[in-house]
Length: 278
Ligand code: SAM
Image 1: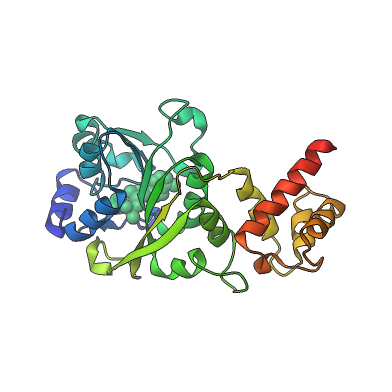
Image 2 (image 1 turned 90 degrees about the horizontal axis):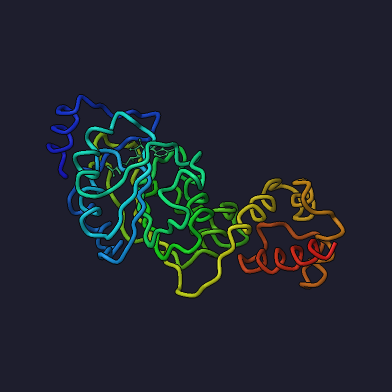
């Protein structure tokens, strides 16, 4: 889909981009092709897309995979997406993905192999965390993010940018920055450069969605120690946190940004067992 095609579709369906919903539509076929190459869809696969918009990725993805489902907040796109996606066998759910519950999914066992999203930047972090929470067995995620978010996604322990997004994505799989996308590849053009990243889960790796809430609680009070931050969630006593730190040989005054992603899992596992014993 190029710029002229985007403009024609907007005109044909009487649509316009809503800035408040992060609507910057892809209008560069090389970028669209690059994202679909990374997704590497085939007919055995189920693909989920968050925010199909005018269908730049969807109209191709729906043909490449066995089952295609999208979640779009903006019901104005219904007529266009019926033509581009649903008439080709795909399914579009008109919902705010952040409010999507398990019962909204097409069936209880729905489990995408690949998740695609040219993310609406105003809700980038919550959507990324929710897809990892909702679909822990997903093998690959390909996301368009704003370039400045890369610092948070790829941050290492001990840095200011290190936080839940860095930790949870590292636990989910191997993450890689694939390529940059200039503002002219979108219509309308955003104020920032964008980047495509992929997160690939090793077959057989374990990812427990409960880790996400634990990591978020650990970073809730960034200026405080891990003990104070975690205990402020009301879910864990200071004694149980101190005891877990002691078991792991980690100092009591540690702050969350000093821990490796694997340390959070080790702590969670120790504290979860202890909670079950109580
Ligand atoms: N995928 C299209 C493309 O690449 O041209 C559109 C991408 S546009 C950056 C983001 C899309 O996400 C828009 O279609 C927007 O309406 C949708 N969106 C925004 N917030 C959403 C939410 N909370 N849940 C689902 N979709 C959302």
